[in-house]
Image (tube, rainbow, N blue to C red; front, side, top):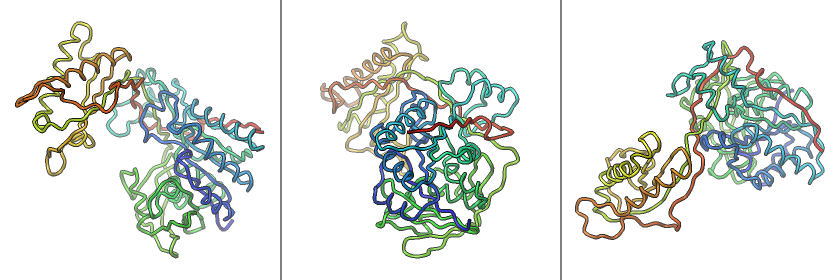
Length: 454
């Protein structure tokens, strides 16, 4: 095989894509197609709750068009990180849609399902054996932390996808996955260079996000050859440049020259980019360095409590000069009012001031500037919803009527855009497992099961 053509449907199945782009891509006779369907970008809630970021109707739309195109062309279709977080309930939700579409549209195909939830006992054994290390600022993992997890998933690499396709799967639906594995697995089966394959996959897993003009989700075609790969957006109104393609490696990457997968490291220091025509870019020089020992990234969440919030605005210039004073007084007042029933560790109270430092959480490079109006989100988190509701209600009413230096009027401090003003946020989860686990075989934890659909 001299070249391998892969169609990336979009960066996140369910975000939408132009059907015309999909048809343009299918017309180029790709050998297979793929789509990512998840990420940790949306935060820990989805892994803990089992819910999806994209709604069922969105998945029905996107999967309906793309599955029909793949079956019409009779090419494999690989979907990774199903249902946002890639746990069992997420895979089951997308699987249910797939069966619905097969019945609706008359599809028949061999399906491989790969689950990514990790057995807690296996993870605890790895903790005892010293095979787990932290990513970022999280502390070392303990067995107690594993036990209190609501759900743990592992990011699968190439091996489970290869087993699925070699087992005759025409469609692959996988739980939490390395984004690159969705696309690199087929290339690895065909013996293509892994440095080039991983680099191409790292770009196209976001669909045509590297194309100009930058816009919503769209389709992109990658063509992998022996010593280079080419990229082309399938939307006729978009184009690629060497800069737009190279710059994509700064997307969610701490180092634009190196990135890591379970199988090893991809070195882009010698990568080169060339404009082929007005819309296509050629890339070569990317290099793969195998890992001495494979690793699997673990993602786990635990229940932190329950949330209630309120949203309000302020425009009194004297109040805005005294926000810190008011915040401190509100916190002190709430603490005194709940003393005896709640201790300091039983709830959290947070104020986010948009228009001052709500995004960065600190003053900007020019110092703290006084806007003419500031929005505030007040958040309370407690062990149960009723307690969070009460704490938030106390904080909201105290802030509304709190005095401050220079205050002249006795009217309320806050303008509320909604009635009722308080919103129950439900359960709050936090990432407490974001660690690497060393393994002998990176594919072993991920079982591949087959079924006939339709």
